[in-house]
Image (cartoon, rainbow, N blue to C red; front, top):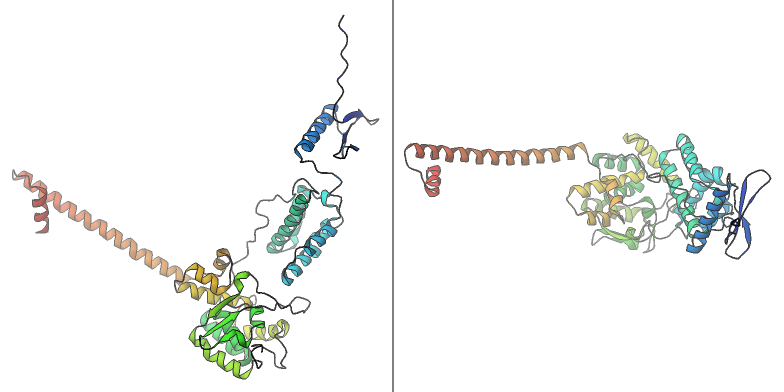
Length: 408
């Protein structure tokens, strides 16, 4: 009689049945310490499968310590922002998004407790209470933070897996006509008139205008250099540094019609000396967004521009005018200080009159092509007629004779 074979002992980990009837798997971690699986299983087979997968992960070097991600999300996210070395405005934006949109949901959780289900639920709730653009920015920030957590081997996989969730679908910004720009410049007053003109026809950002100095202006060449920017944070702090992007440092050649206003402004309002600021307030203080904002809103209302028309939107006028000249995309990017073609295309508006130009050009081209086809068809009919007449006369003309007859 054959002996009953004893069940083979597992060479990796162990499985046991608990008093509850469920099964527990225990395994050695990379240091040799015995650990229990983070969950129990319905069957012994399920527990053994889990052990086999864990062993394979350790062999491949893909195993993640389940306790490594037991780090508070709020603490980890704050440290993530601290370590990025961000520009002041970006740093402020990220901290605001974290405080207002991420921490209320995830602040009390550990990093390894964020799941794809929780992220989807959070996004769905945010979309009902917040603008889509803000939700997209918040999602991108969350995805970047959790991506670093994957790199730090705190979690195995990024829970942010919603396709297209970080893409912003912002509405096309309004654009002012040339007449509206000059009306706005007249309405805002002489001290700030040049700022409106440079914002529109030189595509300069408000933070670039705030830090423009006399030494950056070349009246002989009719150009200005953008070398620094001074954005103002929501706290009111003025932060001076490099422009928004590397492409922001640039020389802008001005349209000649702006030069008279530029000379007059330098004579009447700018600070003296090469380091003198071009734009200062009535009391000689540096440009402040809050003070200028009140004057801008009054002028905008007087001109009749939409309430959502920002000073920043003046760049759209200049960028569109520059594009209408037929300039190359690279030249347009340099002028506007854009580092990507996508950023430039946002500001190239297609007005109805531009569409009419395109339609008219298409109409002319189609008519020309159809006329060419008709003329070739008529010529072919003439040749066919001559050939038939020649056949009836009992003589088949050669190619040269047909051509000659056709010419006659």
